Amino acid sequence: MIESLVTEKRNEKTYNLDQMDVLSLLKVMNEEDQSVPVAIQKVLPIIGEVVQVTVSRLQNSGRIIYIGAGTSGRLGVLDAAECPPTFGTTDEVIGLIAGGEEAFVKAIEGAEDSMTLAVDDLKSIRLSDKDVVIGIAASGRTPYVIGGLEYTREIGAYAVAFSANPNAKISDHADIAIEVDCGPEILTGSTRLKAGTAQKLVLNMISTASMVGIGKVFGNLMVDVQPTNEKLVERSKHIITEATGVSYEQAEQVLEAAKGKVKDAIVMILANCNYEEAQVRLKNSNGFVRMAVK
Image 1 (tube, rainbow, N blue to C red):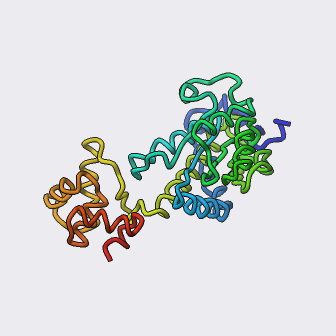
Image 2: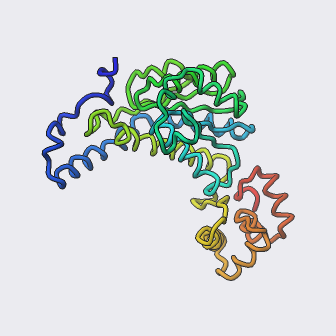
């Protein structure tokens, strides 16, 4: 029953939430938010297992696919949307939300209650056994996610259940389960709060660590960043100077010679080679800069 879920219980610290002055409300909210990283810390080994499998799948042409409804779905779509500019991905990370794109800004009634809708969505992107599907549901019981995870296992893809409740229902339909228990929300049942924060942090961990694992990072620099606007062009030049020690002017020149590709520019400088050789070096090193410049 829904009342048995941690995310639906009332928080004893906020029984009088509507009577608190603003500063008191913000203080208790801040205190509760601080419990989120602690809750995540308890499941780091499980998140680590997910990352290891994900890296292996990505290295073999697999993808990360997030599925969810409501806030959970939106956070998956958000993480997926941020990967192309940050890591130069194309379709390696995909976010699916119950109800489709419209559901990102507007609640779609009944979409999350369908066991078959996620199957249709996964079929539309040609889910394969190389992929990793991460089903996100704060309650841990969303039918859309359950249906998607069941289909994922039928196909032979890696199914991950990610919830904010212990012993979540969706966990029974996955190969591995991440359950982050953050306790009751300050506003009863509003899982866009602590549960949503936990989801954002964990998805950041999975996508970032996985991208590090497939060579999208050199040191702590995002060397596959896509310079698609003025800010990112300037960031790209700064990344090159940080990675190589060259001047801003030289970074600008080499970036142009590398056709706007930061990673290639770095290899050109560190390996003292031209653009064509840099491309070969990166191909032979599977995109890892450190290996390409040896």
